[in-house]
Image (cartoon, rainbow, N blue to C red; front, top):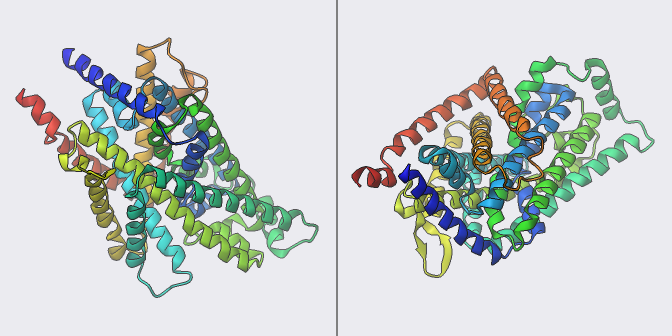
Length: 467
């Protein structure tokens, strides 16, 4: 009991320090929103959405609504905790406080690995996009180059990160909005087109649930991955100038994402027959090519490349924040918190992240054809795990502090949180019915086992046992 109080007391002191950092923050709420969107829209949507479209058909629209609601509950839980305990190591710190040291350790390391997997998948996807113009350059060379470039950008600090990320987010939002406008003109412009006629025929002939409820459920793993990026939102929130606007940032971020996803997917389904979607390329580029807008397709392919690069930048930022929190807490090697005198970015965490990326990206040399699906499936299962622990932490916090302010995004308490957790467990089981996703699950089990083994050798546990 005394140890638990001591842990919470130390964390509370760190939270006070973090609160002072928040008040001195350099980031506006609009920068936070753009960073949140920039950390989420990437290859997981532009490239990865082809898989759930083929799996669910038109009902993929419902899947994205469900994914938005799940994400909103997770962001609401995080915002509620952040109001009470603003902290740079948001995920790990809160689990540490309310679920115990082991769960905090697991939450921190699984989120870190999820970030590394996301960065690696975006790097591989970026290389796939570039092969459209440079087909002879090996995949692993291009993916390694993109990963190295994003590491360099993160080395310049939060201010430069937010500026670059905000700029890229604007480009991505404009691209999706532009696709929606182009699709609307092509569909409702008054001239019938063979491509749109074929798409409408496919919708009419197959119905909204061509593969039944099981198709919808099996698509959810990748759909939720398209929303996976709230780690950037949570760890960047500590730098807000005005923390009271955190809820507005969360609501606008998730609401904008869901709206853009639904409108763009709807436009895609009206341009391209859903059952002709090629999972090896972006379905949005394919849709524009289907209606013979090849120049716009090339432009969109370039924007998608920027989108993937942007997500990599955000994921490296949040991964380093979590790893630093683990190092500060004695749950990662002390090397991870080392800094240079002239740069606040811990170069130890950045070097560790670089090594992790090198390991995963090297797999694109060994498994060039299947590496992307393996990476996003593994990352998606870690996303489900992190969402579940976030919600469980929120429930533990609410049980202890019933009078505390709850985020507006965490509506319908406590039933909504329990329902969301149940849905996550159900969808995890359903995802195992697909072979590629099942392989990702096995990879997560192996990595999870290594994390658990590492817990017994962590510096903090050794210090506790010796005291």
